[in-house]
Structure formats: C-alpha cells, structure tokens
Length: 458
Image (cartoon, rainbow, N blue to C red; front, side, top):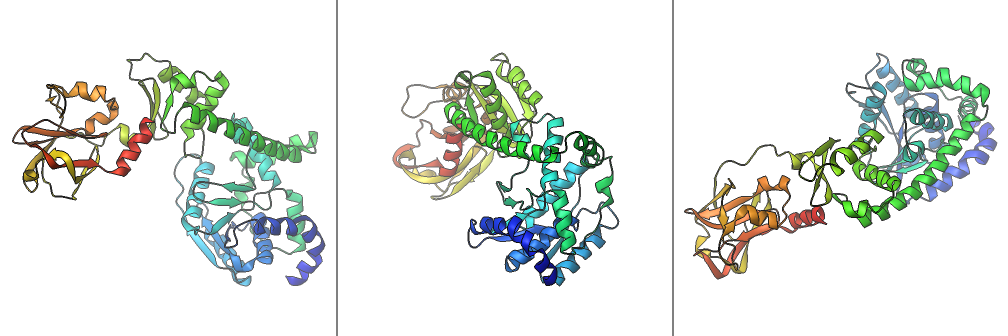
C-alpha cells in the first residue's frame, strides 16, 4: 500500500491532501472522526485516504440495513480491511421501517450514526460531486425550494452532530482513478443499478441522456448547489430577523406577520413550522396553515396538525404546540389527597410547585394535614386574596389569558370544601379564606416551569 501511495503522491498532494489537512487543522484539536463505510468504492477510498491523513484519530462504522442476504458478508469485508489498516471498527444492524425504502433506510442509518458518535467525533461520509448533482436534480423534481436545492454541504453542522464530506468536490471519474492507483478493493451493491429506486433511475437512465446533451452538467449542478447554499444562508439571516420581529419559536404575532411581504410571510411560516426538524413542510401545507388557520373565523378554533405539532390561532397570535401538550393523555378526574411539608415538590399537570415560606400565605397549621387537590369542574367561584368579592373562576382564567389547551391542567386546593387556592400554569392563586395568614406558606411554581410558560407567552 505504501508503494502505491508513493506513486499516487503527486496528485494526492496537489488535489486533495493539502485541502483536507487545512480543514482538519481548522477543527478543534481534540476532534476525532467516525467514518461511515458501506464497502463501496467511494467509502473504501475515503477509508484509505483518511488512514493516510490521521490514522490515530479515526474509527469506522458499517451500517447493516439487513435488506440483502449478503449485507453481513459486506460488513465482514469492511472489518477485514479495517483490521489490515489497524483501525477500530463497528458493525451496527438496523431495522428499516415501512414506507419509502430509500428514505427509511437513510433515516435508520443516520439514527445509528448519531447513536455511536462520541462527543468529540465528526461523522465523515464519502459523498462526491455526482452524488451532489443527483441530489439537487432529484430535489428539483420534487419541488424543493432554496434550502432543498442547497443539497449537501461539505461541513454540515446539525443539532446532534457535525458531518464532513471531504470528497464532495471530486468527480466519480477521479474517484475511480484514485481507487485504481491505490489498488483499493471494494464490494459492488447491485441495488445501485436497480432503476426501481429513484436515485438509481436518475443515475442509469436520466444522467447519461442529459450528460450527452450537456457534458458539463455535473459541474454546473454542483456549482448551483453552492450558489443555493449562499442564498440559503442569506435567507436564514432574513428569517432570523423576521422571527425576532414577529415572535418566537412557539408563537407569532399575526399583526407583525402581516406587515411582511407575502413571500417573506411564506418563508417565515415554512421556517417556523420546520422548528428543530430536518425538513420543511410542503408548499401545500404552508398554504393550508394560511387558509385553514390564519384566515379562519376568530371563533372557529381551527387547528392544523403537522409533524407532531398543532398550529392554531389565539388572541391574535399563531401558536405552535406539541401534540402531547395540545392533546392530554387523559383528563384529570380524581381527587388527590396530599399532605404538604416545607420544601416538598408537588408534580402537577400545571407544573411543579414547591412548598415555600411566604410573607402572606396559608397557615402553618395546614402543614402535615390532609388537603385535597381536585379538578376544575366548571361553575366554581373564587375570592382571590386582596380582591373584593367572589367571581367566576372561568372569568379569572380568561382574564389571565391562560391558553384554552392548558386549562385542563388547572386544579383546586381545598380543605373540608374550603377553597385554599388554585394551581394554574401561571402559578398558584391564593384564595381568601380563614386559613390566610402572615408568615405563612404557598406552593410556588418552579423556575423551570415559569421559564417555559414565559417563552410560550412571549
């Protein structure tokens, strides 16, 4: 192998080695690399090149999708190659879910990568220039926007890991030549030629046809992806400004949103709906949000469900609510008996409340005694401490602008049918009663819960 490397050295230094080394040196000194290797030519060449660059900093992982009878043998082939190079190696089997096989296999593969990546490791994959061009073309045919057409980045910093594609600017022809010069062995996955799959159809049928007419198509599409990455970065900066002006990741002001142009409204809504997810909603889903929720009657209580979240309008704001928060697992029906002591934490649907001393609160005599926490049934009245007279609890909730989807969490604290106060997502409301006293105690909503509610209402 070293003699092969010597013969290869001139092109290696000129075209690749210096570029890779400069990129590695720009990373934190403690960075290490996990190489995803399928056993194909591209990933086997990457494996060998990385072993020349920094053998002491790399590990290798083979993902066995278990979709073909020979997949285990391919893993053993990669294991043998890694053993010859003295590189640590992992085989990880995955279960591919039902649905679009290409998408589900990709999803399972990246979940496995994330599972094995260590804190200081960067995932390294062997995508090359033709992969980039194919990705852009397939996304164009699926109706992608700027973000989708930016395709793959050489350095892709994601929420849970960073991905590096050192071969992204190399053509397939260059990779074949380099692999031949280095005598790199590889396996051949015949599904790469199965035109039932979109990418294989694109590569085997569409690509030769277009390349015959446009010989420099691959380079042109790759260049377009870089232009789209620039455009996507600029668009992201504008979106961050618009998001700051219109609200937060949980809620948007409809008045501020409607001050933007139609194009910026659509882009902001798409970006906002994506949240921390990997993919934006379709154009049609954004249009549904506008027509079914934003433009619906104020009293319609319309809600749109997409990707685990509900989108609805309330108090001239558009809210994004996790499914678990919008649809409670079960309603609160039972009366709970509690015995409160100082420092105790009550974990309730409205939040976590800590029993703490208070200048004005409930009598210390109630500590250690049995109290009842019961659900709000409707029709209750409350005499809030410091206010004159009783008024409907429903009205107090409305005036406090507690969101309708949070109201099922409200519970009443009482003793012998005497209301002591109310647990709400905004905190504990002390009720006027014979048990109110100076130097007493109150259940205080924990800071974490307060912070979450503050974010929701900002």
